[in-house]
Structure formats: C-alpha cells, structure tokens
Length: 270
Picture (tube, rainbow, N blue to C red):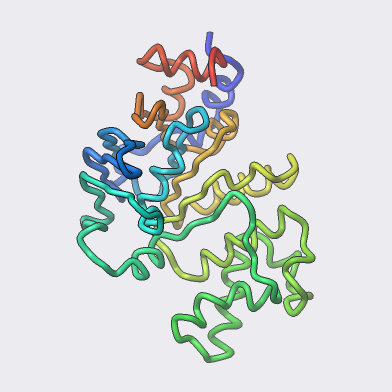
C-alpha cells in the first residue's frame, strides 16, 4: 500500500501524460564530479516539452546538482567536471561557451526568493534592461505580461514603484517567477520553490506551476512528495546520485517497479 500520496496522484488529471509530448531535454549518460568525488552517475532522462517533471529523493542524493547541470550553474564551482550529453531542442548545451544565452533560455527559480533591493517594476524589468530593452512602453507591457503570467498582477499593480522586499514571502517568490518569465525562457527550473512558504502561499505557487506548463517546460526539485504528486506529469527518483526510476507520476506513486522507490514513497526511509 503506497501512502496517501498515491490517492493524490491517482485522482490528479494533470498526471496523465500525452503520448504526443515531444522531447525537450535529453540527458544521456551524465556523470558529474566535484574534484575526485563523483556526485552523479550515468543519469539519462527524456524530459518532455510543456510538462512538469519532479525530481524527488532524500537530501544529498543529487537532485539539485542535476538541476544545475541543465543551465550549467555548476560551471561556477571550482573543480566540477561533467561527462555525457545534455541537449535542449537538439543542441548540446556543453558544446557552446555562450552560457548567457543558455541561461536566458533556461530560467531558474531558487529555494528562497532572491529579489533585488529595488521596486517591483525594476525587479521584473531588470533582465530585459540588461538585454538592451530601454523603450518604456515595451518595458511596461513586458512587466505587466510577466506579472500576469505569475498570477500576481492584481495584487501589485497599484504599487509597482514600491520595494519588492515589502511583499510577503509567497508574493516575493511569485515576483521571482515573473522576473524569470520576463526573460522569455523555454524551460524553467525550480529548486524547492515552496519550501520556505506557508501552506496558502505554497498552494498559490503550485496552481501557478500547473498553469505555466501550457507555455513552459518545468523541472522542479521537491522534498514534498504530495507536491510532486499534485503538480507533476513525470517523476524521477534520485538516490545516491543515480536515477533509480523515472516514469509517469501516477506510476511512481502507485505501482513503482523498483523496491527502493516504493520504500521511499511509502516513507520507509528519507
């Protein structure tokens, strides 16, 4: 018997994958080393376009490390070495040195909101301005579009010039999502985006993620298995740097093929 998460996954219609979904990210035999220590082992995943893919597993199992390979954030760490292949839309992301272009295409939302000490408007407009967009009407339209896309426009439209740091935690996280949307990415990575939020704010972000997959491919790291069951189409279970099992979310939580997966989702460890 696979805990209550199973029931959530079973009834959530969002979990039904479409056979026509195309591959967006292909990961083939990925290995990652921090110096001499290997952190990822032979990871291979086919991440579909405009789906939510959840990465679950105990702390230290390689979920966030893997997530950061998808926009090469690990490049910022000394001694990191990667082998294998990652392609996005058929392009090898490690074959190019243009990481700025990659990180524009592959946005990221972190565990804790990392807003700048400036206005709501300026936070959202920051990336486009750095890309050379100066026209005020264009920026105004982009900020509104992004805030609407993050389902927070109605809450902040009358105080765009006030500090973003005065917002609640849940609102700050949605501003971070709006700031990511403003860069017009294809893929959005989320590393524990609701772990610091209260239940009501968490629900709002989860509802937003479900809406966003119409336009974006989303990969989310979460320790919350109920969350993975509620919002994801596919789930990958990581353990000790390896992908133990990767399948439709309802399969992972109801009829997993590997005993280790069942032990984890039923709470026997982790």
